[in-house]
Image (tube, rainbow, N blue to C red; front, side, top):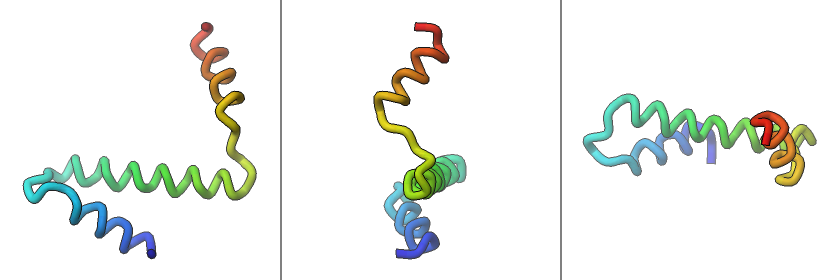
Amino acid sequence: MTTKEQALTAISELPANADLLSIIRELSFLAGIEEASREISEGEGMDSHAAKKKLRDWIGA
């Protein structure tokens, strides 16, 4: 499925009275998933243990 097809499907699954902000949020979510997928395929991602450690370090816990 192309990116355009994914966007159109996501929009069509929203309620008929969805406002523009809801549509933008949905498309932004899809863009984030696409970006994360690209990063993982290029070896830029991190596993959950590394992410948890980074988060703990970041919040000082």
